[in-house]
Length: 313
Image (cartoon, rainbow, N blue to C red):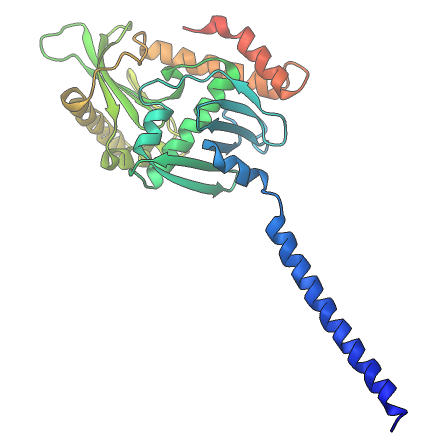
């Protein structure tokens, strides 16, 4: 019997040590999990109004990830997702800009197949169509900030000529809609020239949801002196084009009746200028993203902003 006790004691010690080892490993894992430093994403959330990552407009390599981040105090940083971020000058007081978006729209975040977005809005307006609008704003804003060319013409998705109003020969009613749902109504010479802004404001949700359907599904569409800069591939039918024309008339009437007068929209908007703006921005962005000049992305941004300022219209 005495010979058995040493073996029993040895077995008990072994089992106890094994149990302590398991508890020790589990406790260590839990402690490690609790004290892990915050990830980059977690730290960004604390001081971020908007964070967008995805392919840049006009970039030939649509697999390359670009980033725009705007902090709570409206500092803007741009660059490649896996590279250094460059702080750039950012206009904060533009009507229909980020400050207005933050107060109007609810917060959301979304992981997309080709990127992600975090928007820390403080408003109540929400919905998939508005989320796409905010993504549109981020993409166009990124393009403008890296190129140094900021203007409403760059992000115009609808420019519609409604014709001459009664008693104003030679002046045509114009409706301009930006990619993030802000619209302006005005008068411009029918042959082209400066537009007198009459009113501007946000498109209401019902109207924007209808417009978003045309914008996201249809290819660019042109009719006489009007166009829709569609983001899809489907050719717009005659019936849809007529519905869009009616929508533009209704929106123009709503804006001139209820919208506010704005001095932030450039007064020199006309269709010829809008076409040229899109053309120049496309060329400029391609030169920036394809490889001119040599160097890191921050160098490319500085080169673009310094070499294309003279192309402002």
